[in-house]
Length: 271
Image 1 (spheres, one colour):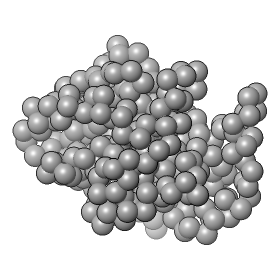
Image 2 (cartoon, helix red, strand yellow):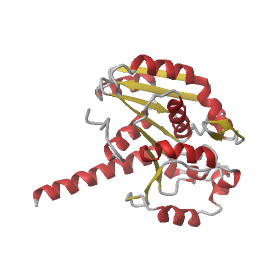
Image 3 (cartoon, rainbow, N blue to C red):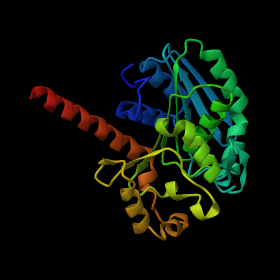
Image 4 (cartoon, rainbow, N blue to C red):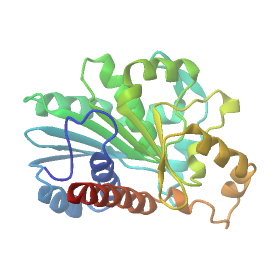
C-alpha cells in the first residue's frame, strides 16, 4: 500500500502524508471519500456522523485508519464544542469537556466497528485535523483502556486536549507513537491556553515558513514569542490569521517533505 507504512517505527513522512490526505478527504462528500480510498487499496469504509462529530474508518488486510474531521469555521456547533473549556475527569487525568462529549457521540459505534473489522492483527493508525486531532488523541487514550493497540497517532493543527496529568499519563504509553504536526504560525495549536491548565502531548513535528521540518522545541518557543497577542487577532471577526491552520497548507508541506526525502535518497544512491 504505497500511501502508508503500516508498521513503521517512529515518525514516517509517508504515513504523515497519507494520513494528511485522509484528513483532507474527511471534509469531502461520502461518494468522493469512497472512490478515493478504494484507489488507495482499502476494501472497507465506515462513516460515523453525530452532531458536530464526523469520522471514517478504513480497513484493509494489514491496516486500519481512523480519521476524525476537524472544525468547520462556518459551523457554529463545532465552535460551541471547542469553547466548552471546562476540564472533566477522563483518561487518567482531566480533559476538555467539549472534545470528550463530541467523541462520546460516536464512541460506541467506533468500538463496535473496530472489533468487527480488526480480525487480522492489522496495524491501527489514528489521525485528525483541528478539533479532529483532539478527538483522535482522546480516542487513542480510550482505545488503550480497552486493550486495543494503537500503532501511531498523527495530528495536524491540534489544540490542547487535557491537563498535565492527562498529558503525562498519555505520554508514558504513546509519546514515541504520537506525532503532533504544526505548520508554521498555526494559532489553533495554542488553544486552549496553558493558563487554563491544558498541555500538549506527543512529539512536536514543526514545519517552518519554508516548509522545513524541525523537531527542536526552540523553534516552537521562538514562534510563541513572535505571536504574543495573536489569539486576540484570531478571534476578531474579519481578521484572516489562520491560513497556516488550513489542512490544504498542511498537505503541501507534508508532500514537500516526502519529495525532499526522495531526492536525498536518489542523490545518495547515485554516489
